[in-house]
Image 1 (tube, rainbow, N blue to C red):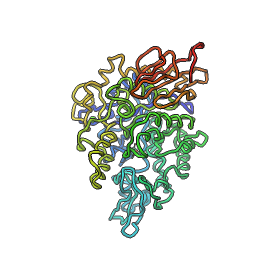
Image 2 (cartoon, helix red, strand yellow):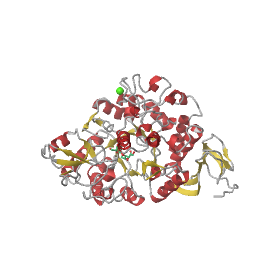
Image 3 (tube, rainbow, N blue to C red):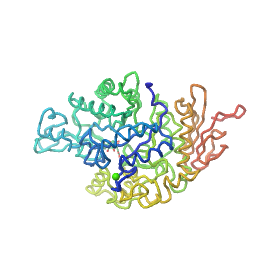
Image 4 (tube, rainbow, N blue to C red):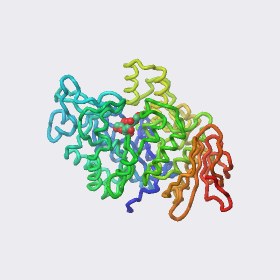
Amino acid sequence: MQEDWWKGKVIYQIYPRSFCDSNGDGIGDLRGIIRKLDYLKELGVDLLWISPLYASPNYDNGYDISDYYAIHPDFGTMEDFDRLVAEAKKWGLGILMDLVINHTSTAHPWFQKSIRKEEPYTDFYIWRPGRGKKKPNNWTGFFGGDTWEYVPERGEYYLHLFAKEQADLNFRNPRVIEAVEKVMDFWLAKGVMGFRCDVINIIHKDSLENGRFRPVLRGSEYYLSRPGLHSLLKRFHRNVWEKYRAFTVGETVFVSPEEAKKLTDPKRGELTAVFAFAHMETDCFGVKWFPRPFSPARFFKVLAKWQEALPWNTVYFENHDQPRSLSRFGDADRYPRESGKALALLLLSLRGTPFIYQGQELGMTNFDFTAMDQVEDVESHQIWGIVEKFHLPKRLYWKVMRAKSRDNARTPMQWTGEAGGGFSTGRPWLGMNHNHVERNADKEGQDPRSLLNFYRRLLAFHRSSPALREGTFEELYRKGSVWAFARRSPEGERLRFVINLSKTAKKSPITGTCLFSSYEETELGATLRPYEAALLGEESKSGKEEA
Ligand code: ISL
Ligand code: CA
């Protein structure tokens, strides 16, 4: 297997609870995924990243693991998992596991033994005594609020950067490092192709000093991409990942291009790729709970910066933590098809590994929930608790919640127009979006102009085009809501891309014959209509270009 076998591959993310339920209990499962492998093959993706499948009390839907070696019974059995790997292989699809090692569930036996100081688990987690009546330090967490929880039995506090049911592991303990290496080896030996590494750039804590004042994530200067992280990753790479040629994509929060470059430099031997967040933070001030209107200009500026800064990017507009891109960056009401296709074209025209999140290919939109009791997500509830506790303006925050809750991405996959959406014959664990009646895989499959069929054609083209798969990125034009760039393969294939990500018509900086168009046009003239995007072939020798 070649070292960079993953280059040019397209990844599809499955949120297993919401993908396909095979037994009618309302929860998606492994047999459900197996049932849909033909759909995924026909769509044209290569690798499936599946959000956590492990045993878990589900405070954070599997991101709180209580046994790294067991499949959650909701999802099936280890035999089902092995069958999935084998069946996927027959379809030419590889599996990526979600590796959550910054923390475990407090129900994990390691943690339970750590409470009782049973060796070797005493220092598996980050325990500290309080400072008089005060907590060990002033850090604040990812879901808002506290990061320390007192356990009377041990007489100490433990650190948790997420929910209090998620205790941070202590990576200064060599025993912890060995334990997680064993976990990685176990899954790679089963034939998975690699990992998506959850919040990997925060696993190493430099010190536990008080953080300086900042409105969110106080203390993060002591754990965001610290030097100790690089040593840990080098070690994982050397000891485990390298021998399997594993693909490792790190979820790296608040990462700078400089750090990302180091983390993915093949000469250093750390990660294969990283998820940066900068483009996902262009419609807020730093964190999503302080939103501002979406600006395509800001979005393109950040994307362009990262395209130029990194030798290789990941390209994603959605995942299980983010609102739906059609609702967020497009126009789900007036231009669902055009803006959905424009975003698809942008996603697959940029340089890097593209990630499609389940339902994105159908144009699934934000969850149409009307009350907090329809929301399951732990983060949403924690934030709502803060709104209530501090009497923040509810009307305003309700709007923010509707736009930003992570459950926007977690509603069940819309397979058919029936009740239960073809996702389940029972009652789905989370509400189905009502628009599943109109927008679903079944209906779209039969419509040649649907978003789903657009994705299928585009993915087939992507596979056959060295320029899209691996070509260089060259910016041609960027102003307001209009962006144009070119991709060129080493063999000289050159493609040009242009997009108008707005509701108003704009002048186009380039013209030519369309390989793909969000309006399904064959020629692009001087004007870009609302949400018009196009992928153009080589410019004709006679045709002149402004850009
Ligand atoms: O979701 C977020 C904001 O709404 C992020 O801050 C998110 O918490 C962060 O990107 C880390 O996410 C990952 O780890 C979390 C888990 O809840 C997320 O689902 C996961 O993607 C803790 O494991
Ligand atoms: Ca089920």
